[in-house]
Image (cartoon, rainbow, N blue to C red; front, top):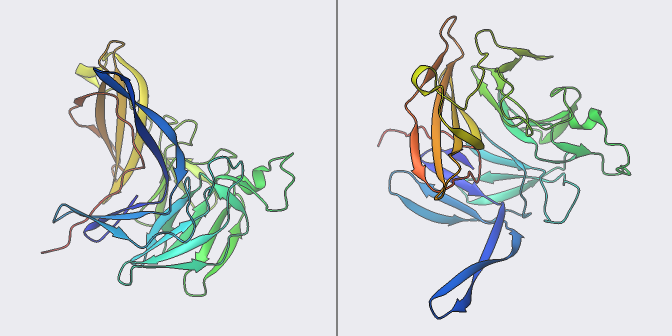
Length: 299
């Protein structure tokens, strides 16, 4: 999911189909009929509250990287089959004015669960479960998993960069704020206890960013009965990083979900963290994608 102008785009992914099955005269159940990887692209207009179908991806995919650069949407890598153990290396470019997808050159390395981010005017595809196409898969290499690839959007050519992520576990999210990249964890541990910034060579802990937990608010909410974390996603607005964390509350039924928003000011020297009041919802919620930010233009 990405935003562009007044629109939010939902791109590709997996769809789980359910079929209504008769149980008895008084009830019925819905059973999963399988999961399918789809190329579908939907566009939501924030102003008019309307959904539209867009041109589909050239390659159906999920767990792929996606970012916006120069008012174009770039997608790369991911998986094209549910049962596949390997990623793909293909990439595509979407032009919203023409409603068309254009095939880009393949990346050097097969990847999935990689991250797409636009940094200093260039498209970066970072990390992921990665391997070279001719790999025998017996020895997964940290060299591939910690690498990134950067696209020259004019020449449409990928350049391989080694060691940009520095871990063999894919990042959870990477976002850009004022030409600096920030991350808070990886796909196995979305919150490492602090925010890290990339200086062009290494990821370093940001001063004042250490926070014991994103599961609770400080002070009055310290003893909340929060259990399993359902999701954690991060979005940049201006100089600030907004963290939305969702937790299942209590052990009873029906399930309840509490969402908490924390804000970290990357430009602050003291008291950089701020927390908003929590919001409780009925049912157990989950995210289909990381969140995105929509900056509405003037009417």
